Amino acid sequence: MSRVEWQELQQRHRETVDAMLADHVRRARAGLPHPVEDFLFRYYSIRPGHLRRWHPGLGVTVEDSPEFAGRRGYRSTLGRDRPDHWADPAAFVSGDFAGRHTHLSSVRERLRAIDSRAPAMNCFGLHEWAMVYGLDQSQVRHSGQPLRVGTATIRQTVDALGLRCSHFDAYRFFTASAAELNPVTLTSGNRNTYEQPGCLHNTMDLYRWAAELQPLSGSNLVLRCFQLARDARTLDMRASPYDLTDLGYQPIAVETAAGRRAYVAEQRSLADRGVMLRAEISDVLDRALAPGSDHLQHN
Image (cartoon, rainbow, N blue to C red; front, side, top):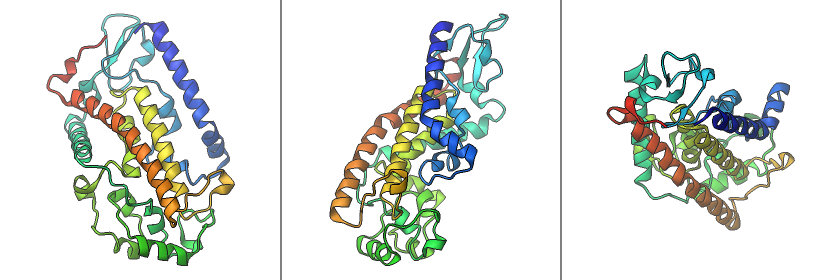
């Protein structure tokens, strides 16, 4: 890829990210919390600056690119004042090959396990309800936002519909009394047994995996995963018992049959979008972990 080409793509990427994150950056500078979007930066610990940095992805050489010198995960042509650079799996894991290789292998195993299952569409987003089950307003996680339903309705809804959570990182924030209602006890060790592609948290996790793989995963893939994660988080909180109308989010009343139908329709759409992204991430992992991957062809 010529210097003119990659610089144009890099500039376009930065402008897109700046526009997408302008409100978040403004709130962060002012110290203003946001119950929906802060999650994407705090839970996943990926700063806006990381999202803004452009990477071409595996198999692409950026010509005449001295700006890439010293970036982890890249190799370059030698003996030139203005070398070319390309993402290289061996360089990506250098210094901690065993640990990084093991982590990437575990991610690939999890994605394969998730892909082996049909999406379940019967949890109705009640994980946010389970996180406040049995609590009063002063005890809830997002105490700055009012609840749109009373504590009695929260208890009645969870008791009537039941919990069917498959994602440990949601389950671990359940109240103790709610955790007892889940049909299985989820742990960090049994993720591959229960995680499934219909889960909103699995859909959001695609952003984590894609971002962790940079520079092997290109910025185009990471940004598409971020957009999907943002949409999933929005549905997550619209279906919650919190009232977020002052922030412009219309609630999905999953305590009603109509609300549950609306939730499942959006959940299914998100899961469908995640199928291709998960396949792209899996392809990057397969190529990165393939024998001789340090000699991948680049162009």
